[in-house]
Length: 197
Image 1: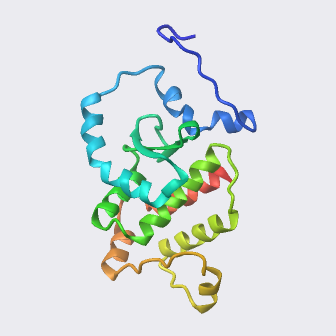
Image 2 (image 1 turned 90 degrees about the vertical axis):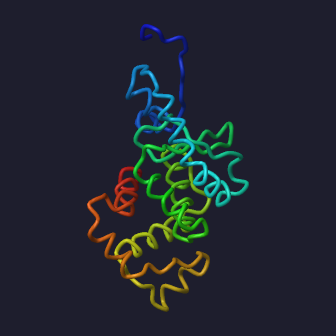
Image 3 (image 1 turned 60 degrees about the horizontal axis):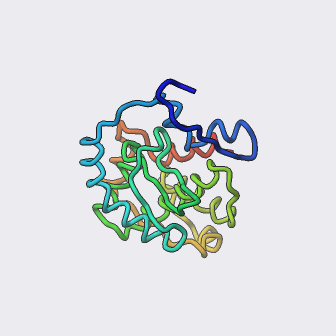
């Protein structure tokens, strides 16, 4: 054990590789045991209270709590299944953009789709199986279409009947996504999926 370490933590999973890449280990891998800037964390935590409420509303009874945490370092969120809690990473760029979108319109259907997509990705990266993998696949396809500015036609409407409709982005919004120097969250989610799958 490392000097100053008082506890031994363990994690179980389907394989060593799954466990090694678990979001639960990110902070342990990063630090060794770093000191926290509590003041910065608390001020950022206040900014994300609204997003936590929006996420909790979207997830309903699936989770008891949605809180800001510093457990995840790279992942946008992680799940604490024993406590039925989703912990969001306030320093993740995906969560920051999601916070801005939720602050602008908490009923935005794209925000709801992204929240559910984040939950499903967190379930997969934590070693769980999805109850409805087809719904997950449909949600990924919808996000890809949105990111690529592809309009659904009548044939796709039947395939997506069980999914809520995406909000149409206006031309200014589409231009902002194309010209943005920030990573496109849909590309980030897609690359995260490639790592998982």
